[in-house]
Length: 158
Image (cartoon, rainbow, N blue to C red):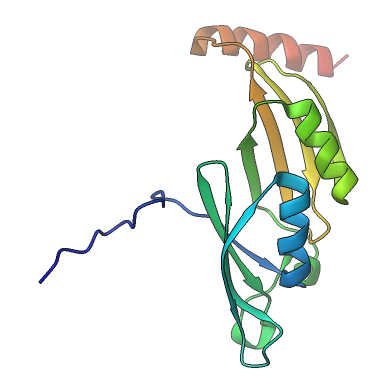
C-alpha cells in the first residue's frame, strides 16, 4: 500500500477557511482583487451554492464556502463582523492595495511605512473579511522594533 502524505503537496500546515455570504461572487472578487487562482469549486446540493472551494494566491492556498447557518457556519455579514484577519505579503503593497480597492474592497487603514519595517495597509472585502497587505522593507532586530514601537505609541498619545 502506498504511503499518503499527512500534508498534501502544495498545502501548508495552516490553511485559512473563509465562510462568506455569496461564495460565487467572493471567488470572482478574490480573483480580481488579489489575483487568486481557483483550483477547486464544489457546489452544494442546490447546484448553485458553494459547498467548498480552494483558491491560491502566490504560494498559499485558502478555502471558502457559502455560509450555511442551519449547519452552524456563518460569515462576517451574518455575525456583524469578524475577529479574524488575513495578513498577506505582496511584492508591491501600493499597487496591490489599489487593485483591491478598484475590485470593491474598502480601505480600513491607508498604506504607510510602519515601525516594524513593513509598508502596510488594511482593507475589508465586500464579504466582511479583513485583509492586511504588506511589503517588507527593512529587517529589524526585536530591540529595534521595540524602540520604534515606543516612539510610535508615544506619538499616538500626543
